Length: 343
Ligand SMILES: NC(=O)c1ccc[n+]([C@@H]2O[C@H](COP(=O)([O-])OP(=O)(O)OC[C@H]3O[C@@H](n4cnc5c(N)ncnc54)[C@H](OP(=O)(O)O)[C@@H]3O)[C@@H](O)[C@H]2O)c1
Image (cartoon, rainbow, N blue to C red):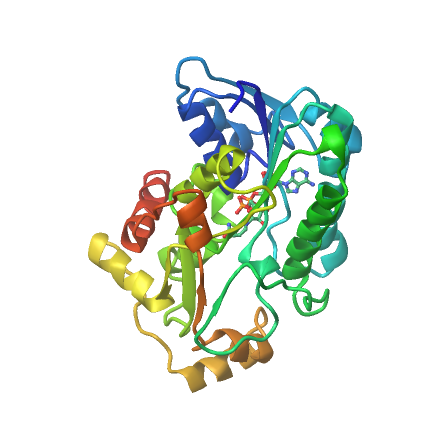
């Protein structure tokens, strides 16, 4: 990798922060974009990161909707890791709150890359949500051959956002010619767990763990969760800059576990705290979901009980990824939460 500048969008975020940490631990020159440089919850943990000799960290303000700020953030860089997106699955206004940040934001990022003329590598953070179709057969293993092309604004706005943003990247990249051609890879994590670095990191995928920590549920829904460690996701992003194939589509998935089994691991590892461990029978869970304001019966029928698997061997082969064990990932999620008394 030439010793240029790597810009990481969404650097205040859970995955973005770990990507920045990973790059700095390798002595890279990093430009980290955040929405508010004065917010310690967004930047405090970044300025505290260890930097290997030769590396450096510059933090700049950028909003995905402000194309001038996106142009300025990307200007003069050689590598772009675009993690920024709205990580929300439900909203009163899904178009502006969920889809637009991904779609308009990604359009602004690729436009800035073109204008810069200096970017040689682009890694875009996608998701299993850009792959998973609305309906799948119980027990199926999905690969990167599949696209979530049936995601709709009404049923699955987050899937629509991630699928649409990835398509924008791929179509744009396909049409680049001559000197403008650069390496492009998309990374597709499943549910990401592992150490949060800021209290803001508890709101996305870690809300699944926080429901257990805060004992929000006395009993647990019978749901399988596909898991990957945030530190492995960060490593895959950084490796994808120099390893793997151009146009690569890499799933990052370490394995899967029932939600109740995650709680059992936490109970064993942190026995002084109380953890819910009783799993609701499927039909009772369906009735609970039918009356719950945040989930629907159609969601419950699709997601409860059914098993879904992902083929992450391309990342294992091309990026030489080895995944942390699920037990290590789940266990390591907790200390920062307890030590900082994050709720
Ligand atoms: N966590 C998972 O399980 C998971 C799984 C698959 C894929 N992903 C993908 O991974 C990426 C990062 O997710 P995450 O879990 O790290 O979520 P996160 O902690 O919410 O981070 C999202 C980042 O995007 C930034 N952002 C949001 N809207 C923005 C805007 N308008 N302008 C500039 N920045 C904006 C946020 O900034 P603020 O701090 O200012 O809000 C934050 O830095 C996303 O693309 C997500 O879709 C996540």
